[in-house]
Length: 236
Image 1 (cartoon, one colour):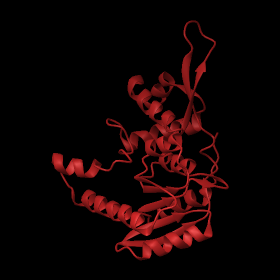
Image 2: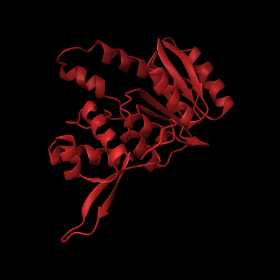
Image 3: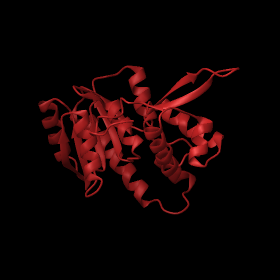
Image 4: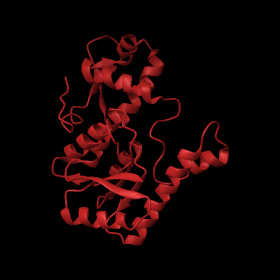
């Protein structure tokens, strides 16, 4: 069974999505949240026991956005699958959600048939991913990446473990240049900069120019404090 967390601040929507999921084989509602902070806390707490497989995530909530939730989860290397279900349809929001690895983006309102089609497609994708082992064929790779609304969570060449290491350093160190981060992490400047740029484009850290030296200003990277607070933790 695909353990699913439903996140929406509207009680009627929670009830509707719960009833929709009950009609689709292979899914079970394992939790419900009405806010951004509660969603992040639920995912992180359950990760130690019985993790959720999928989050049906609203974008607009009183204490934060779906983008904030995804940033917080990705910053902590949570690889949970997410389907955005929202009335928000502006291109910038969609772009940010896709950059953060959302699997599908479903715009409200929609009939059950559309919901069912997307969830069944996700179930097939998940089964395909679990059945593919060893070296994948091109057909298997195409099947795993063949959805149209979301790329893989990390760009080619970036590793989740290293991303977590870089993220943890930025979260506690204050503003760092790529050279300073590389020295602290024992990595090459070029490699570290790729991770920093990915985190910056995802909104987890922020870029800013560092002035004071001769020549062109150096770029420094600093933890985005908006990511903090969603799970009760605090930044530096």
